[in-house]
Amino acid sequence: MTSQKASEKVNIVLCGASGQMGRRLIQLISSSPSLELTGAVEHKDCPFLGHDAGSLAGVAPLGVVLTDDFTQGAKGAQVYLDFSSPRGVGEHVLKAAQLSLAAVIGVTALGTEVEEKLKEAAKKIALLYAPNMSFGMNLMYKIAAEVATLLGKDYNIEIVEAHHNRKKDAPSGTALMLYEKLKAARGITSDVKKLGRSNVPGPRTSEEIGIHAVRGGDIVGDHQVIYAGPGEVLEIVHRAQSRDAFVTGALRACQWIIGKPPGLYNFSEVLGI
Image (tube, rainbow, N blue to C red; front, side, top):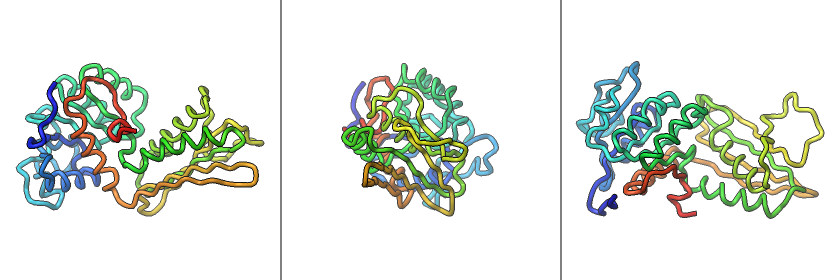
């Protein structure tokens, strides 16, 4: 495989093109000198099929129409970028592998069956999967784990996440990733998460990690890790103020993954942390 030359554009087929994330991705791709949208894919019941992706996103027409045919949409693409749905990822990722397209996937709550398809596809293509592609949040993963190690088991850990009232999954994929990082930092191999505190008898154990979900308004995404110890509390907080935090990370990942050998990658590798 050869690396992408600085003067060449990265051609992207975008799945989930009509959603809020999809439209913002189209806007930024259309204004980038190093990226080009060559395909836009949606599910078969999408009311915008046949519409120009640029016009739909509020920019100049791009000559790329929304289609429900992944193979058609992927013509000329080098990277498959997916912000559709777990079902959509399950339908697209193995097709991307057959077409030798590198993949960047940001959909959360995939489920075991789709996650297995990602692993299968990653045997053939470079595939990056991350529930959160913001630079700050991925740095928080690292910092939160290091703090958990330094403070030790005398400090109880709780995760609180908040998102808009239209979010379908709870807890968020980011909160679950934080949980996995914190659990690994403590050397815990069993499942010790407690989702909320309703019907959870006390007293609290030293190993368990609580996860609490808040849904309301138009909150883009807040994540907080609370370390409560003897006589003090330490908190680490990340707040996404707009979807651009995720969009810019996803587009950086699309450029980074060109030329990488087959395998399953995460966003921390993009940042080199």
